[in-house]
Amino acid sequence: MNEEKDMADARTILADYRASIDNIDAALIHMLAERFRCTKAVGVLKATHGLPPADPAREQQQIARLRQLAKDAHLDPDFAEKFLNFVVREVIRHHEQIAASSNGGTKTPLPTA
Image (cartoon, rainbow, N blue to C red):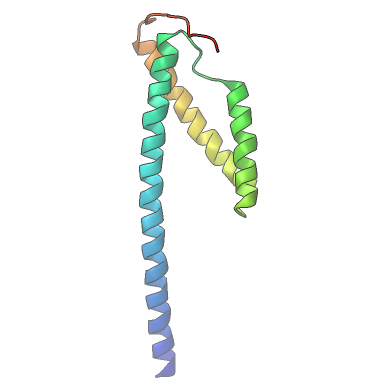
């Protein structure tokens, strides 16, 4: 009987963990959707002003920043970098599509700071 109770307790704990994981997954999807809404606006801005879809310097800064955040959060920095690279590749692909669909767009120079 004790074994059955232990197994029931384990199933309850497992269900709680899974509910938390499901909530986190939902939050991640919503965060990614918001991120892509922002990067779409960046893509439109870049296409409008004739800027390239990719910004290698910015990407390197982001990699360094996110690797440090991962270390601070006790997450494997290599995993964080792979994840960011995946997201950035998708963003660049979207920016290329936006630029191609803008048919050259207006190329108004951006103001300098």
